[in-house]
Amino acid sequence: MDTNLVSAFTGAAATIMAAALTVYGNNLRSLVKRKELGYPNIVGHWRAYWYLDGFTDVYLEDTVVINRIKGMDIYGEGINPVNGNYPINGKLSKNLILNFIYESGKNYISLSGVIILKIDPLGTECNGRWYGYTKEDKVTGGKVVWKKLS
Image (cartoon, rainbow, N blue to C red; front, side, top):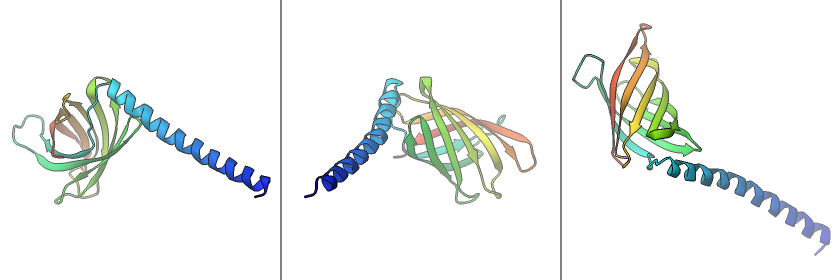
């Protein structure tokens, strides 16, 4: 085989391996960092119970699916058959704190807002607060509880 062709194949293979190591190395480093911070695996389905300040009854119940974590960034979706699905994205912070931003569709009650949760060390429940703007341009929110389904 021609030495130039062998050199080209070797160079291409080395480039592919370097790219793979960069991607998987970053994922491995972020996994190690999450473990150092004490984070359990939060990927999966969560039953979410949303409350309004001043009320004890559940305001809204839906499912939140955390699809993936890349580095310290979290990507997911809220599933609500009545009001429509909504993307939910956030970040992992120290001390088992999750910070999210959500944007919902035109038929949803609260159009845009934030969620701050503290996850239990076992990774089975999150508790915190949510707040968002409504269609009427008013801030609403309250307590939120997520319980892991899978």
